[in-house]
Length: 463
Image 1 (cartoon, one colour):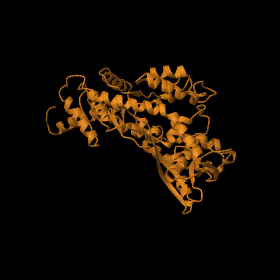
Image 2 (cartoon, rainbow, N blue to C red):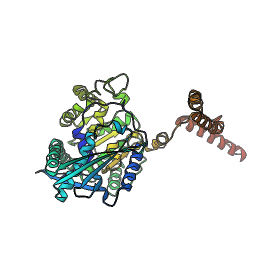
Image 3 (tube, one colour):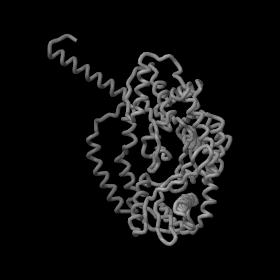
Image 4 (cartoon, helix red, strand yellow):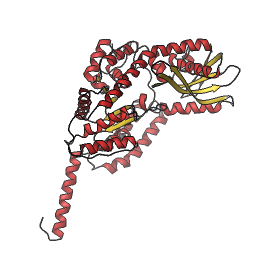
């Protein structure tokens, strides 16, 4: 058996500490794209001795499985002593930095050991390159390490992670064995077996399947059961069940529980919105306002391991119970539990929304074999518009213009220009009315009825 983890996920999981703090300057929405641009810019400036985006891999053998640590070093600089270059874009003031961030340096040291092990190097250099993404100013932190020192440190990290890998290995064996023995829990209704077969074949051939069927035919069970079977055969590693409604989320959760009652070993988590699951009256995620944010990262791994080894069903109530026990943030804990879950039940936005999607599964460089079961997919049209659209209010530009008028005439001029551009658009919308989906349906029926009546009158026919 092989258990894989990226260098970044390994060091961030084992070495994290301290508190959740939203008072720190948040990165803009385009920070990821800007970070990629900064990486490419710095890499292009380097000479011929610089190798960019070097793939590295280390296999740690245990009696039960191979733990594979892999990733991509930003740069390898050839020289008398080879240097691993780790590039980080930041909005911090570089002059105030006393040294590299611990988890950033840990990533670079992992790559340094992996390179030394592959090339039998006795000594390695590590260079942390920080670039301010607004000014493009650079600052370097360089350190030298022996291979023996790097090996002792790296193996120590793996030893700390071993209990998690051991559990994953044992769990995967138990889960796979239970899936092989799992049978459909009821006699098939009419068309249900065909539906389950279509779902399974779509997974096997890596195709998309659109299903339209009346209520009551058992669509949820008929899609989850073959998806679980496919996962047990190694055709996927995780199932995402996406829905927009709490009631359908509950139906999916009950279906997984039904299969567990029939012998399935399967861990599922329900992701609940932060505002709903937060213990505090105001959602202020910093140690000054929330005792659960204070020291969260110092306690979270112990909380996760306790929940992981005692329960298979991580719904809101279960997560809240363990979060209170260990005094950690329940929302962040539920996100962490998703890493150890076979099935994730959540809202559409955790996959499709560009601002809040689960970066631990879908960010650049992260790969996985996932199955997506999307309930009531027709709702994605409207939700997609909301996720990928911005709302501009003309009056807001005028209000801001009045505020900045005495401070910045250039900004005042630009705001006035925006307001003038929006004016004709506003006039176009005068007389328009925003209606709900049901209202628009009723309106369409009324118009269709009027059209039919006119047609019959014109053709001298009775209704």
